[in-house]
Amino acid sequence: MTSMPRRYRFLKGSLPASLDGVSVTVNRKAAYVSYISPPQINVLTPPDAMSGPVLVWWRPITAQALSPAFFTFSGAPYIAATHANGALLGPASLYPGSTTPARPGEIIVLYATGFGQTSTPVVGGSILQSGTLPALPVIKIGGTPAAVQFAGLVFPGEFQFNVQVPPGAPDGDQPVSATYNGLTTQPGTLITIQH
Image: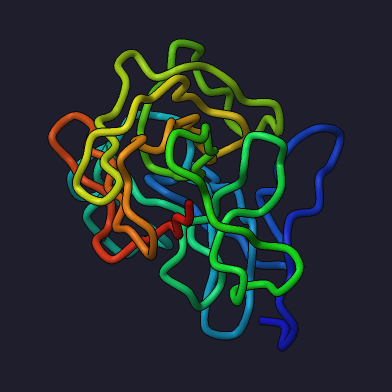
């Protein structure tokens, strides 16, 4: 394995099944390798629905058909999120000059993974993925339900949620959760709000 991290290299519009000689199989089907470094390998599993024991590199592990989680900014509890105009959302100190807090009532965009099948079937290996979730997740900001305007797949393994921050949300770091089909995203994720 290489000593420097490596990321996707697209080949003819498809995700790679191998990156710098590293490949992974899940239930004897090629997975799509998105990132490798000495302590970590990130893969996107084949789109087949799976749950229970699966073989990864011929070793059994347990998989779930759904495993919802928010993407977070590197090394921080803050959700990878943007304002509706695409500007990064977060405390001003997270990425000085680039991140700004959300305002109550504002539409924001949250990014996540692991929410399962969409209205459009996922095509294994394709870099073009889309489709909406059959039902909207329940997203709470600071414990208050937020209005979800869009919930769908926008990139392989990447879901986008367009959400309105509750108008009465208080200032400061607020916990965020998304519940879908009885499963909830990881605890401890935050967005920052400021009037």
